[in-house]
Image 1 (cartoon, one colour):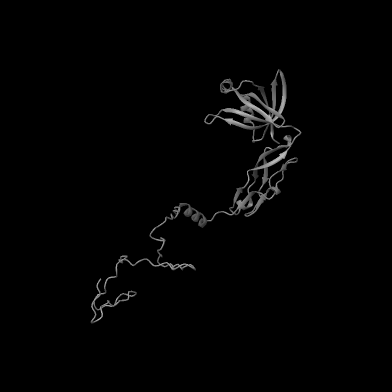
Image 2 (cartoon, rainbow, N blue to C red):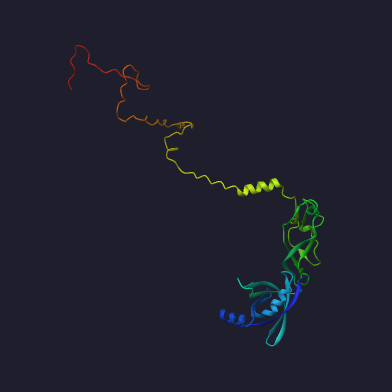
Length: 284
Protein backbone atom coordinates (compact mmCIF):
# COMPACT_ATOMS: atom_id res chain seq x y z
CA UNK A 1 0.00 0.00 0.00
CA UNK A 2 1.24 3.49 -0.84
CA UNK A 3 2.54 5.57 2.01
CA UNK A 4 0.22 8.14 3.50
CA UNK A 5 1.88 11.31 4.76
CA UNK A 6 0.54 14.43 6.39
CA UNK A 7 1.27 17.96 5.25
CA UNK A 8 0.02 21.31 6.43
CA UNK A 9 -0.86 23.71 3.63
CA UNK A 10 -2.24 27.24 3.51
CA UNK A 11 -4.25 28.91 0.82
CA UNK A 12 -2.52 31.79 -0.98
CA UNK A 13 -3.90 34.69 -2.97
CA UNK A 14 -0.69 36.36 -4.12
CA UNK A 15 0.22 35.59 -7.71
CA UNK A 16 2.98 36.51 -10.08
CA UNK A 17 6.75 36.08 -10.18
CA UNK A 18 7.48 38.63 -7.48
CA UNK A 19 5.03 37.03 -5.05
CA UNK A 20 6.47 33.57 -5.72
CA UNK A 21 10.00 34.84 -5.15
CA UNK A 22 8.97 36.31 -1.79
CA UNK A 23 7.42 33.00 -0.74
CA UNK A 24 10.54 31.03 -1.62
CA UNK A 25 12.71 33.54 0.20
CA UNK A 26 10.60 32.84 3.31
CA UNK A 27 11.15 29.06 3.01
CA UNK A 28 7.72 28.37 1.50
CA UNK A 29 7.01 26.37 -1.67
CA UNK A 30 4.10 27.39 -3.93
CA UNK A 31 1.75 24.54 -4.83
CA UNK A 32 -1.57 23.82 -6.48
CA UNK A 33 -4.37 21.35 -5.70
CA UNK A 34 -6.58 20.11 -8.53
CA UNK A 35 -8.80 17.15 -9.30
CA UNK A 36 -11.88 15.91 -11.10
CA UNK A 37 -14.25 17.18 -8.42
CA UNK A 38 -12.52 20.38 -7.35
CA UNK A 39 -11.41 23.64 -8.86
CA UNK A 40 -7.67 24.34 -8.94
CA UNK A 41 -6.60 25.97 -5.69
CA UNK A 42 -3.30 27.76 -5.06
CA UNK A 43 -1.68 26.84 -1.76
CA UNK A 44 1.70 27.03 -0.03
CA UNK A 45 3.62 24.46 2.03
CA UNK A 46 6.67 24.86 4.26
CA UNK A 47 9.83 23.68 2.53
CA UNK A 48 11.13 21.84 5.60
CA UNK A 49 7.87 19.88 6.00
CA UNK A 50 7.82 18.98 2.31
CA UNK A 51 11.44 17.82 2.24
CA UNK A 52 10.89 15.70 5.34
CA UNK A 53 7.85 14.02 3.78
CA UNK A 54 9.59 13.32 0.47
CA UNK A 55 12.66 11.99 2.25
CA UNK A 56 10.60 9.19 3.83
CA UNK A 57 8.81 8.33 0.58
CA UNK A 58 10.02 5.04 -0.95
CA UNK A 59 8.09 5.15 -4.23
CA UNK A 60 6.62 7.55 -6.74
CA UNK A 61 3.08 6.99 -5.48
CA UNK A 62 2.77 9.08 -2.33
CA UNK A 63 -0.63 9.65 -0.77
CA UNK A 64 -0.82 12.86 1.22
CA UNK A 65 -3.34 13.88 3.83
CA UNK A 66 -3.42 17.62 3.24
CA UNK A 67 -4.42 19.53 6.37
CA UNK A 68 -5.57 22.77 4.83
CA UNK A 69 -5.86 25.88 6.95
CA UNK A 70 -8.56 28.08 5.44
CA UNK A 71 -10.41 30.93 7.22
CA UNK A 72 -9.31 29.67 10.62
CA UNK A 73 -10.66 26.17 9.94
CA UNK A 74 -8.82 22.98 9.04
CA UNK A 75 -10.05 20.88 6.13
CA UNK A 76 -8.58 17.49 5.22
CA UNK A 77 -8.00 16.65 1.54
CA UNK A 78 -6.62 13.35 0.22
CA UNK A 79 -4.23 13.79 -2.68
CA UNK A 80 -1.42 12.17 -4.65
CA UNK A 81 1.84 14.00 -5.24
CA UNK A 82 1.60 14.38 -9.00
CA UNK A 83 4.73 16.36 -9.86
CA UNK A 84 7.63 17.97 -8.04
CA UNK A 85 9.47 20.68 -9.95
CA UNK A 86 13.14 21.16 -9.01
CA UNK A 87 15.55 23.95 -9.82
CA UNK A 88 17.53 23.11 -13.00
CA UNK A 89 20.95 23.22 -11.28
CA UNK A 90 20.26 23.76 -7.57
CA UNK A 91 18.91 21.13 -5.18
CA UNK A 92 15.78 23.07 -4.30
CA UNK A 93 12.06 22.54 -4.88
CA UNK A 94 10.34 25.23 -6.92
CA UNK A 95 6.75 23.97 -7.18
CA UNK A 96 4.60 20.95 -6.40
CA UNK A 97 1.29 19.63 -7.80
CA UNK A 98 -1.24 17.73 -5.68
CA UNK A 99 -3.89 15.63 -7.44
CA UNK A 100 -6.90 15.36 -5.15
CA UNK A 101 -8.64 11.97 -5.05
CA UNK A 102 -11.66 10.52 -3.30
CA UNK A 103 -11.22 7.69 -0.82
CA UNK A 104 -14.29 5.92 -2.27
CA UNK A 105 -13.37 6.30 -5.96
CA UNK A 106 -10.92 4.13 -7.89
CA UNK A 107 -7.90 5.78 -9.44
CA UNK A 108 -5.41 4.77 -12.13
CA UNK A 109 -1.67 4.96 -11.60
CA UNK A 110 1.66 3.52 -12.73
CA UNK A 111 3.39 1.24 -10.22
CA UNK A 112 7.06 0.14 -10.45
CA UNK A 113 7.69 -3.61 -10.85
CA UNK A 114 10.75 -5.31 -9.30
CA UNK A 115 12.14 -8.87 -9.69
CA UNK A 116 12.88 -10.94 -6.59
CA UNK A 117 15.65 -13.57 -6.59
CA UNK A 118 18.11 -14.73 -9.25
CA UNK A 119 16.76 -16.71 -12.23
CA UNK A 120 18.04 -20.29 -12.63
CA UNK A 121 18.98 -19.53 -16.23
CA UNK A 122 21.21 -16.73 -15.01
CA UNK A 123 22.75 -18.64 -12.12
CA UNK A 124 23.58 -21.88 -13.95
CA UNK A 125 23.34 -21.04 -17.65
CA UNK A 126 24.93 -17.61 -17.76
CA UNK A 127 21.76 -16.07 -19.17
CA UNK A 128 20.71 -12.45 -18.88
CA UNK A 129 17.52 -11.18 -17.21
CA UNK A 130 15.87 -8.54 -19.37
CA UNK A 131 13.44 -5.94 -18.01
CA UNK A 132 10.81 -5.59 -20.73
CA UNK A 133 8.49 -3.52 -18.51
CA UNK A 134 9.60 -1.47 -15.52
CA UNK A 135 6.15 -0.36 -14.41
CA UNK A 136 2.57 -1.60 -14.61
CA UNK A 137 -0.66 0.33 -14.96
CA UNK A 138 -3.18 -0.43 -12.21
CA UNK A 139 -6.63 0.59 -11.08
CA UNK A 140 -7.69 0.52 -7.44
CA UNK A 141 -8.94 2.54 -4.50
CA UNK A 142 -6.44 4.98 -2.96
CA UNK A 143 -6.10 2.81 0.15
CA UNK A 144 -5.10 -0.21 -2.00
CA UNK A 145 -2.54 1.56 -4.17
CA UNK A 146 0.73 -0.43 -3.89
CA UNK A 147 4.13 1.25 -3.67
CA UNK A 148 5.58 -1.38 -6.01
CA UNK A 149 4.84 -4.88 -7.32
CA UNK A 150 7.39 -7.63 -6.66
CA UNK A 151 7.75 -10.72 -8.88
CA UNK A 152 9.65 -13.92 -8.04
CA UNK A 153 11.85 -14.84 -11.02
CA UNK A 154 13.97 -17.64 -9.48
CA UNK A 155 12.42 -20.44 -11.60
CA UNK A 156 13.04 -18.79 -14.96
CA UNK A 157 15.30 -20.76 -17.31
CA UNK A 158 16.86 -19.45 -20.53
CA UNK A 159 14.10 -18.68 -23.01
CA UNK A 160 11.38 -18.46 -20.36
CA UNK A 161 9.47 -15.32 -19.46
CA UNK A 162 6.83 -13.86 -17.16
CA UNK A 163 3.83 -12.09 -18.64
CA UNK A 164 1.31 -9.69 -17.18
CA UNK A 165 -1.22 -12.52 -16.96
CA UNK A 166 1.21 -14.44 -14.70
CA UNK A 167 1.46 -11.62 -12.17
CA UNK A 168 0.00 -11.92 -8.67
CA UNK A 169 -1.10 -8.51 -7.36
CA UNK A 170 -2.57 -7.46 -4.00
CA UNK A 171 -6.29 -7.75 -3.39
CA UNK A 172 -8.29 -4.87 -4.79
CA UNK A 173 -5.74 -4.09 -7.51
CA UNK A 174 -6.53 -4.65 -11.19
CA UNK A 175 -3.87 -4.69 -13.93
CA UNK A 176 -4.72 -2.67 -17.03
CA UNK A 177 -1.90 -3.87 -19.31
CA UNK A 178 -2.33 -6.60 -21.94
CA UNK A 179 -2.13 -10.05 -20.32
CA UNK A 180 0.19 -11.30 -23.10
CA UNK A 181 2.70 -8.49 -22.58
CA UNK A 182 6.12 -9.75 -21.42
CA UNK A 183 7.43 -8.29 -18.16
CA UNK A 184 10.67 -10.26 -17.57
CA UNK A 185 12.64 -12.50 -19.94
CA UNK A 186 15.79 -14.62 -19.57
CA UNK A 187 17.85 -14.69 -22.77
CA UNK A 188 20.94 -16.70 -23.73
CA UNK A 189 24.34 -15.04 -23.26
CA UNK A 190 26.07 -13.45 -26.24
CA UNK A 191 28.83 -15.65 -27.69
CA UNK A 192 32.30 -14.35 -28.54
CA UNK A 193 31.58 -14.75 -32.26
CA UNK A 194 28.36 -12.74 -31.98
CA UNK A 195 30.12 -10.07 -29.92
CA UNK A 196 32.94 -9.85 -32.47
CA UNK A 197 30.45 -9.58 -35.34
CA UNK A 198 28.53 -6.84 -33.52
CA UNK A 199 31.75 -4.96 -32.77
CA UNK A 200 32.91 -5.25 -36.39
CA UNK A 201 29.54 -4.07 -37.70
CA UNK A 202 29.57 -1.09 -35.35
CA UNK A 203 33.13 -0.15 -36.35
CA UNK A 204 32.56 -0.51 -40.10
CA UNK A 205 32.06 2.85 -41.87
CA UNK A 206 28.62 3.42 -43.24
CA UNK A 207 28.34 2.99 -47.03
CA UNK A 208 28.01 6.26 -48.87
CA UNK A 209 24.74 6.58 -50.76
CA UNK A 210 24.96 6.41 -54.53
CA UNK A 211 24.28 9.77 -56.14
CA UNK A 212 22.49 9.51 -59.46
CA UNK A 213 23.00 12.45 -61.77
CA UNK A 214 21.73 12.98 -65.26
CA UNK A 215 24.39 12.59 -67.95
CA UNK A 216 23.96 14.00 -71.38
CA UNK A 217 26.57 11.64 -72.82
CA UNK A 218 24.56 8.55 -71.84
CA UNK A 219 20.87 8.26 -72.38
CA UNK A 220 20.72 11.39 -74.56
CA UNK A 221 17.91 11.38 -77.05
CA UNK A 222 18.93 9.68 -80.28
CA UNK A 223 22.01 7.97 -78.76
CA UNK A 224 21.98 4.26 -78.03
CA UNK A 225 24.31 3.18 -75.24
CA UNK A 226 26.69 0.33 -75.84
CA UNK A 227 25.10 -3.02 -75.11
CA UNK A 228 21.54 -1.70 -75.39
CA UNK A 229 19.09 -2.80 -78.05
CA UNK A 230 18.15 -0.35 -80.73
CA UNK A 231 14.63 0.94 -80.12
CA UNK A 232 12.01 -0.31 -82.54
CA UNK A 233 9.86 2.03 -84.57
CA UNK A 234 6.32 2.33 -83.38
CA UNK A 235 3.58 1.17 -85.78
CA UNK A 236 2.54 3.92 -88.14
CA UNK A 237 5.70 5.96 -87.55
CA UNK A 238 8.79 5.98 -89.77
CA UNK A 239 11.93 4.51 -88.30
CA UNK A 240 14.28 7.09 -86.84
CA UNK A 241 17.35 7.60 -88.96
CA UNK A 242 20.78 7.04 -87.49
CA UNK A 243 22.86 10.16 -86.96
CA UNK A 244 25.32 11.13 -89.62
CA UNK A 245 28.71 9.47 -89.51
CA UNK A 246 31.52 11.37 -87.88
CA UNK A 247 33.34 13.61 -90.32
CA UNK A 248 30.48 13.78 -92.83
CA UNK A 249 29.36 17.31 -93.60
CA UNK A 250 25.70 17.80 -94.42
CA UNK A 251 25.04 19.11 -97.93
CA UNK A 252 28.37 17.98 -99.44
CA UNK A 253 29.06 14.93 -101.55
CA UNK A 254 31.17 12.18 -100.08
CA UNK A 255 34.86 12.27 -100.84
CA UNK A 256 35.97 10.37 -103.94
CA UNK A 257 37.40 6.95 -103.38
CA UNK A 258 41.12 6.56 -103.74
CA UNK A 259 42.35 5.09 -107.05
CA UNK A 260 42.17 1.37 -107.09
CA UNK A 261 39.76 1.16 -104.22
CA UNK A 262 36.06 0.37 -104.32
CA UNK A 263 33.65 3.02 -103.12
CA UNK A 264 32.46 2.79 -99.54
CA UNK A 265 29.51 0.58 -98.83
CA UNK A 266 26.20 2.27 -99.32
CA UNK A 267 27.64 4.96 -101.60
CA UNK A 268 27.08 3.64 -105.15
CA UNK A 269 29.25 5.33 -107.81
CA UNK A 270 27.27 7.09 -110.57
CA UNK A 271 28.81 7.45 -114.09
CA UNK A 272 29.45 11.01 -115.15
CA UNK A 273 27.03 12.14 -117.87
CA UNK A 274 28.77 12.90 -121.23
CA UNK A 275 27.25 14.35 -124.42
CA UNK A 276 26.49 11.91 -127.16
CA UNK A 277 29.05 11.64 -129.97
CA UNK A 278 28.39 13.86 -133.01
CA UNK A 279 25.88 16.06 -131.26
CA UNK A 280 26.66 19.56 -130.14
CA UNK A 281 26.47 20.28 -126.47
CA UNK A 282 23.28 22.12 -125.64
CA UNK A 283 23.69 25.72 -124.65
CA UNK A 284 22.81 26.84 -121.20
